[in-house]
Image 1 (cartoon, rainbow, N blue to C red):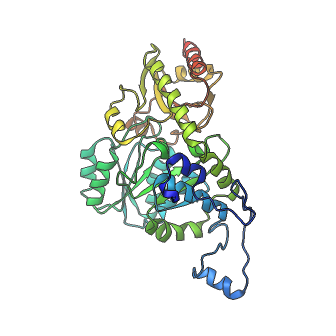
Image 2: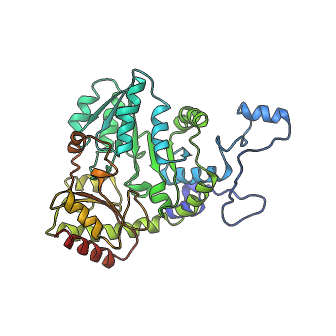
Length: 394
C-alpha cells in the first residue's frame, strides 16, 4: 500500500514520513537555514533546479516538506506549500496570479483581513473586485457574465456561517474561465473537500484546527502541481512566506490527533447549538448542523461533518453582548478559533471591526452577534457557563 491508499486517520499519523539515517520514531526537526553541497558544480545545479536537493529553508526544508506532504494527502491535493500564516497563504495565492486589469469575483461574506486584501490592497494594483451575495447563485451567474480571473469564497463563512454551493459556483466559474479559490478553514480539511467539489485552490490557516491548541501560526496553499509548483512557488520563494521548521514540526504532531479533536469539538458544538436555540435570551443561532440553518440541506450535501464553529445573536444590543462575554468564566474571550479551549468573540468590534457599518450590515453582522469556537471541555460545563453568562445579560 502507498500513503494514498490509507484511510484518513492513518494518513495523519504516517503520511509523508521520511526517516533519516538515525531511524527516529518521531519526525525529525531540521532547524537549519541552509544546506551544503559537495562541490561548486552541485550548488550551481541546485540553483538551476537540475537536481532534487534542499537549497535554503525559505525555499524548502525537510521537516516542512513532511508537513506539506501530509496535508496534501489529507486534502487529496497533488501539491501543497506551507506558509508562515494563514493570511500569507491567502495573499500569496491571490497575488501570484493577478495583475493590473484582472478581475476577481468574491462572496462578500469574508474574514475581515481577506475583505481588506480584496477591497483595499488589490485595487491599488489595478485589480478589480466585485463582492456579491455568495448564497445567491443568480448573483454568481450575473457577476461571471463579465470575464474574471479568479473566484474567491469562504464556506462556511466567518463569522456568521453562511454557505456557498461550492460545486455550482465552480461550474459557473469554470464556464467563465475563472479559477476558484476556497478558504476552507471553518469546515476543516476533515469535513469538506473543495477540490472534490470542483475548486482549483484550497487555503488554510493551519493556526486553527490543524494546530488546534493555540500555539503557532501557519498556513497552507493546496491544489494541482501545475499551480502550486509553477505559479505559486516562484512567488513564495521570492517573497519569504515560508513557515518555520519548528512550527511545521509541531503541526505534524498535531495532525496525528486532528480527527479525534475535531470530532469531539463537533459533538460538543451540536449540544451547544441545541441549548442556545431554545434559550429565551438568544435571538437566533447559525450552525450548519442545526435544522434551523437556512442552508442545512446544502451543508448535508457538501460537508461530511458540521464542525465546531457557530454564531448566535443575543436578544439585545452591543452592551448586552458585552455583558454576556464578560459573564463567561470558563469560555475565554479570544479572536482565535479551532482551539482545544472554547473561545468566544464579538465580531462587530474585533475580527470585522475594519469594515464599515454598511459592509457589516451586508454581511448580517450585528452588534449583538457572538462567534463561538467550541472546544474539548465537557458539554455540561460549557452549557453551564453559557447559561450563567446569559443570565448576566439582565
